[in-house]
Image 1 (cartoon, rainbow, N blue to C red):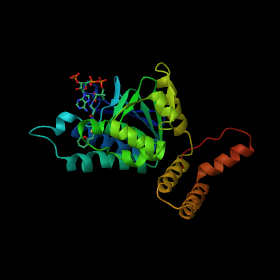
Image 2: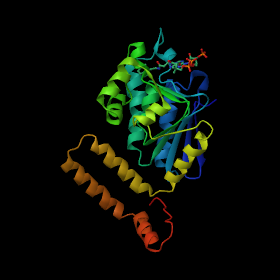
Image 3: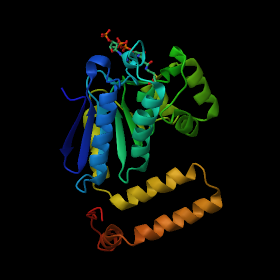
Image 4: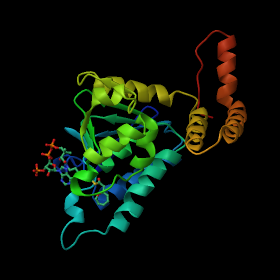
Length: 258
Ligand code: LHQ
């Protein structure tokens, strides 16, 4: 059985974490396989949006704890620098939108991989746990970067220190995720967003992502410069020409991602 599955649905690459007996927790093989799939998606021109989800009842329980305990444990440097850091970097720098469809529990690195995606939606029965402190660890996979930016310093600090479970509805209420769908509607509604994203002007998506990434550390002055740079780049795309033409002709635009 493959630990991560990839299939295409129109312009969407569907990536499914697939170690459901272990709640899709990451061992080395799975982390490296996800990296290789993300790399493939980044370079495949026919892929215009990525949909990341989990198989079975959970999204991802973070690190496979059996792999980092005992005589043959993998060392933390390897796990952090070769597994999670590249995955977070790939998702944040991917020049295409990544939607995470959190189908069930997302814990530890699993929660933070979900939260670093561009749009995060969850099934109503899903939940999020900053599980690290419960085993004497510290949030990784970009959690200390993204979570305070999403929900504020105070709540981020409480969730990280206490390791409480955050329901999907609470996550939506506090701005940690975009939307919750009922368990029955979840697969269809979340895929609808991915399909919509794949028909958007893909280069503009990449420029929006870059501008938002930069906004995390820029001054207003620097950010205005980045916006101008991204806007000028967007104005040179075929999709921009099509967008304006379609507006003036009072029809829906057909974006090709160029
Ligand atoms: C698991 C796991 C798991 C192995 C469920 N590993 N088997 C970075 C640097 C280096 C090292 C350490 O890690 C990191 C990053 C991190 O991600 S640290 C945080 C690691 N994750 C956790 O601490 C979460 C551990 N899991 C849980 O607390 C629970 O499983 C949650 C709350 C996620 C879900 O609870 P339940 O829905 O009750 O499911 P379960 O506990 O019954 O799990 C189902 C099976 O999956 C079970 O196996 P079994 O053979 O008994 O059916 C679990 O042992 C296994 N599993 N998480 N991380």
